[in-house]
Length: 313
Image (cartoon, rainbow, N blue to C red; front, side, top):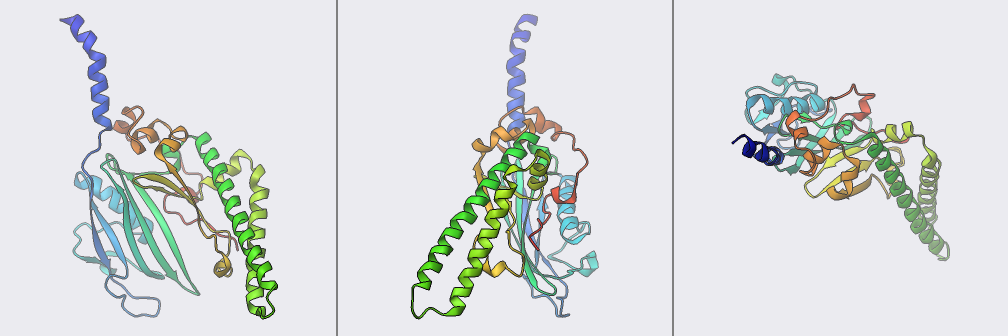
């Protein structure tokens, strides 16, 4: 009897680990209207600003996810007994937010990913896109260090640098070709020529910056990676690097945000055991049971999920 049990034990352990890697039920996500006044003192129109309210597992798990979202976006805890809307009574101040929508990019029982599109207005208006991903087993808000190895982050930063350089070089060639063709036209307007010359100059400057960054140190690569937006979508993992241009030059920037999209199979060599088990459903399932590796203190606020990367000024 004892011998049969010993022989069966490895198989039982394997089956148990496989069960841990299986996804739980997807979360339920509903919309809450956010009420308040715009920068000019007028009430915000219904539906212009919305927040998700997540129901996942038990009440404590749901509160952990919702508190992270409300604290990140409004600096307050999520409402305990929400109705169809939230506002000043819940401690929410819009502080320049003119519009906000969200979309669920992944919700498979392992990971919940929510993308926010927001517009902020002050002296000028600026759009922003932010991503938040959660481990649905623990409610953990996923940071880069939770799922990637340090070597993996450095390599992905190198890939992003190559992607950015290729994007600016391609756009520079396209704009230079258009400028050369326009200059050959007898009736070409000065305004059109000036516009293309500015676009050529911007892309040349951005390409030059990426060339200079090609010899970055390991520390610089990690610092760059921590400014990226990370989206654990359902089919691919996307990494976003903010545009090169300042706000004043934004109208001339035809490249904009640079996106590096990888399949989970391509991403796997860059992940730690927890990342492999959580994102791709492979690797040691015990990592999912533990809720991931112990988190070290964040080195900078830019490494937090949802932090807005800086742009060139």
